[in-house]
Length: 433
Ligand code: HSE
Image (cartoon, rainbow, N blue to C red; front, side, top):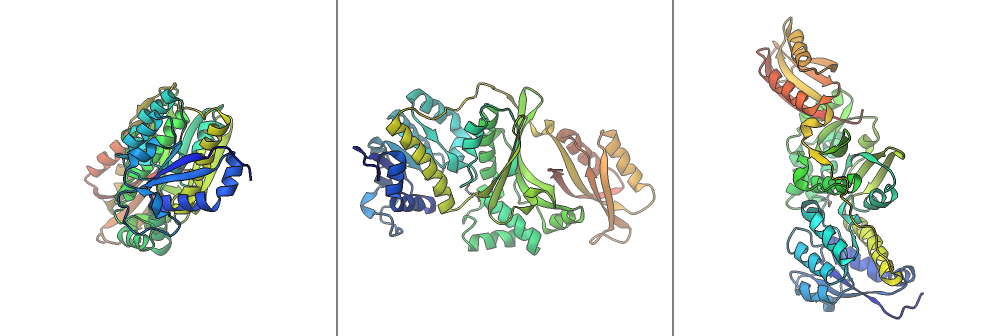
């Protein structure tokens, strides 16, 4: 073991599932961490809302405090796993202004107001690390921020929410409907008691904003992200997707549009059944990063859960602690490119549209004329007798070629107005072809 004259004082803000695993790793690996850092990491306090609440035995109750501000003021490294915007933001700004290094897993805060924290850390000359905020254990923030710093990222696309991937996977492989799959995820401790942030796509949108900011050197906030969750995805959508050789995934996509802009979106999408993302099952995450020189890179692993998230946090803690011991600091956020952030309408995508139509001569011609009129080209058409409609009706599954999202959505609106179209049953984007 490397002896160090002075231990680094570590504060932990929050002690839920992830915080407890952070304590476990800091305790169980104390000697190894000291050897890697060159100083011991001493937990000097754990700020919690309720100091009386039951805790895992690994948590030394003598360290618990409900005075987070005082704890921050006597720390060299502050680890934040409370989540939410406040009081996390105030506490982290206090830590930064006081000269402490910060490690946070708080995607909601960084997605909402990362620039305030990045600027504060830059001014104070302290480290702000957040590998655990995106895709749990998967090293993704650091590769995008550091390994690809010499390249030009063109696109980031992937699955960044484990709960919704689990739900969609259960719907695909077991035929469950969304509500059943969410209940099952909750019973397994996968989904939160209130799964809104996951199923509405907000968690993925925050992660997409963080990744887009890093990848494109541009300030992107969660509010800039077009966000659709999975609550509208039905068991029938999953079956229609299968009929055209796809599975449904909740994707986060951040991409360059032309030279001076980006668009960032989160929505359910069909991906081909033979695409690598289709093989991402259960609570796993997977993200493709495309860069001009590097080409396509794929990152895969556990995107949620106490121990995987704690692993990412500890990696950051070791890094910032090494900087404390050896001098220097990590990279600051850069937003020099200052690209415009465009609406999803400017993104290029493909749609699968399911229409219930009258089953008589000339209907297909009218439908295809409407698409042609909007400059949208059809890739495939399948017609099935309508399961639920009458004998005089058929279900048409149209998959389009790529087009601007605005043109595709205008096409859908026009199709809905055609007299031969009884109903637009489903509209989902298609990605990854
Ligand atoms: N709730 C998230 C997920 C993990 O299911 O992926 C934390 O962001």
